[in-house]
Image (tube, rainbow, N blue to C red; front, side, top):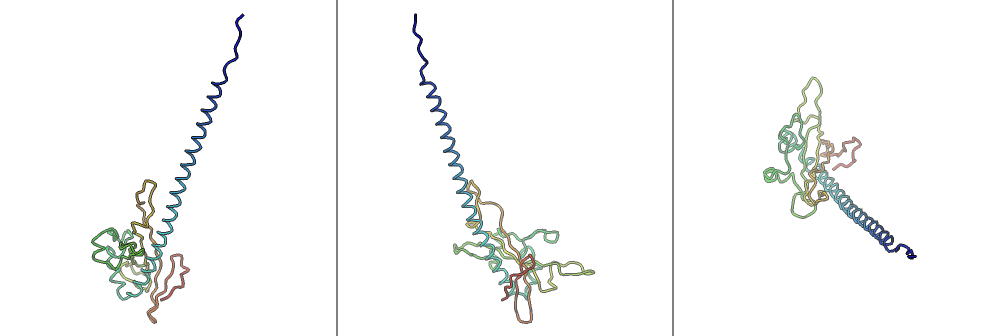
Length: 201
């Protein structure tokens, strides 16, 4: 009678090893993807705080510049294509901080905050709604010694980047109310929430 032989366990063992290697490779790939994503998120978070700091610095510069130049407010307000980047029904052709002509003709509206020799912020001014009925709203003239001033972070180095390395198209803008107290020549800054910063200079 022929003898029966038991099946070799090598095939089953090889299958188990292949499955274990596949699972381990999957875990390693997942960890690498997670670590890469964390790095990108960390860089984005770091750049976001730098961009916030850039816009904050620009807003302080705007308050200082336009506060010192209160006699020229109506001149600024009458030229929204230069001094107002906010598109509205009144301002159909807003100022474009990326326009090289604007930068060349009005360098006082641009500032380098990180010392790399390139403009990082654009500062601007626009009127608040300070007319009451029956008067029509006139965005080109200030009536209450209060205006909205703001800054846009236009920095190429401080703007966040996408995963592919390209800069994000969004720009951070900050605004605040600036009130002029003519008696003592004091300017007080207020936040858009209305509480104010208490900063007078």
